[in-house]
Image (cartoon, rainbow, N blue to C red; front, side, top):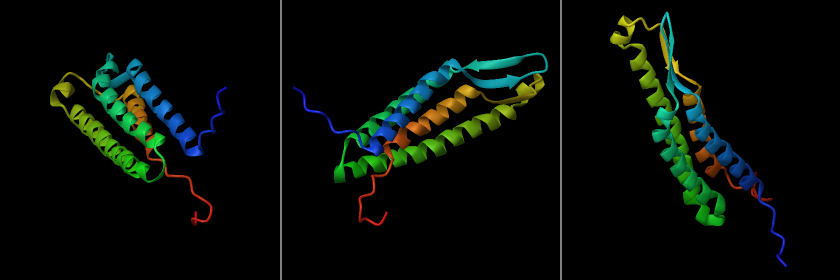
Length: 152
């Protein structure tokens, strides 16, 4: 007979849900267009598969740290939670900065303007990949549950 397992804590349930949603978003992003450029006579869509080589390794690294953070308890969890927080902040800053810089340089490209480009910007695949890459480290950065008597 197998002894019944204790139910997962709320932090772990939410963390596993965030981790799954983030990885699913990262894996679904290549199916959507990553970049959209509008010309007077056509719309160019860059495939989302171009994102995969950058986004997937980063999401897997963040996922590895998040899984370790979710499986640890007590004081041994703190360094992993802090690492997840650091990855969350760096993902937000780096992902936003790289997307903004790419957008700026694509929008101000004089050769594209000569070609008749009206507008350009990230497509739904880019936004979904960014959201997924933020959800993955967020799963490992969740705070511990407050204990009775600790003032929370």
